[in-house]
Amino acid sequence: MEPGHTLILLRHAKSDWSGGEPDHERPLAARGHRQAPEAGRWLAAHVDRIDLALVSSAERACRTWSLAAAELDDAPPVRLDDLLYGASGASLLSVVHDLREDLSTVVMVGHNPGLEDLASTLAGTWVPMPTSALAVLTLAGAWAEAGPSSVELRTSGRPPP
Image 1 (cartoon, helix red, strand yellow):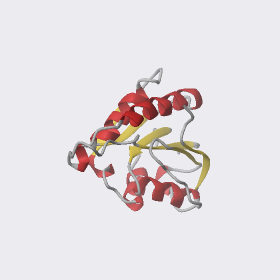
Image 2 (tube, helix red, strand yellow):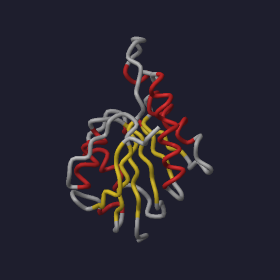
Image 3 (cartoon, helix red, strand yellow):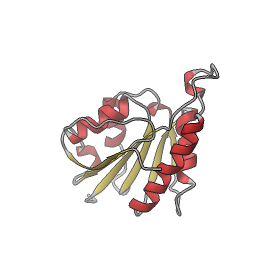
Image 4 (cartoon, rainbow, N blue to C red):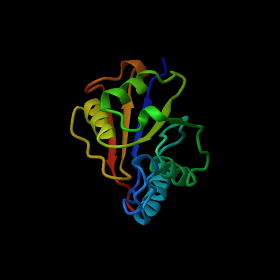
């Protein structure tokens, strides 16, 4: 078992509701195009290494990660996952449980209410996740052991511009 697993939750940046696209295909709004790189710059400044990015297949999540990852010196491999779109906190926890133990730090890019539910369940306290918010959670044990109140919430919130 690798001690010190870190799970970083990133909610997609502000999306654009004006175009009438189906929800899955909704793009980022202008504000979202500003927010996503801010999240990436925060990650570059505060996280040594990310081993994997799990990204919802929704357009707004993919674009958020694309813009955030462009700010990293060494962007991690990306796994697009349809299961992250519209997933409940419990479903997202199942994804965490299935992570390989050799992955020390994983970022999950997705949606509310699932991300907020997952963060709040793991941290044992309410963790608000507005658009572009990050939550950094540290787990001492195996990914499969993650559960209610089993992690330390290191930080959360929207990165400053």
